[in-house]
Length: 123
Image 1 (tube, one colour):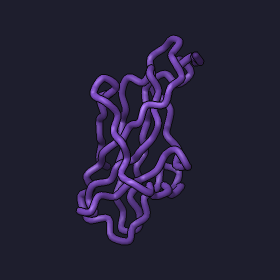
Image 2 (cartoon, helix red, strand yellow; image 1 turned 180 degrees about the vertical axis):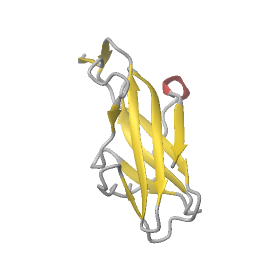
Image 3 (cartoon, helix red, strand yellow; image 1 turned 135 degrees about the vertical axis):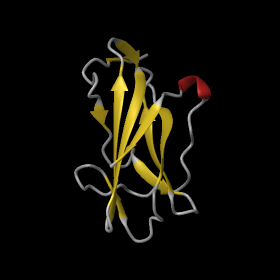
Image 4 (cartoon, helix red, strand yellow; image 1 turned 135 degrees about the horizontal axis):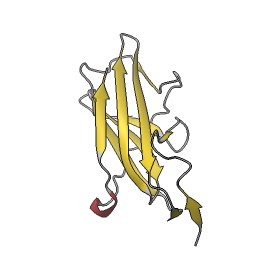
């Protein structure tokens, strides 16, 4: 069994970065976006910041973890955002303008026992 200390992420938390393990899925309605990522057992909550412009949809996911030692496991999470306008040709980027890769399939959402509260803030 592996363990990892989660206190390094504290609140402010850690920002999820686009990459092979953090991707965007766009639902057929073109307004619902799921950011998929593997989470950890010590994650307590998340804040998702959304800013829409004519060219981009900026989605920043910040995860807050508890202090202490946690089991290092991968828990599938999907952070849901409902856009004010249809995505269209806009790019989905993070707070540093890095584009999220598109998920090849709809993210698997974790079980209820591992759900964490998520706050979505729109700019």
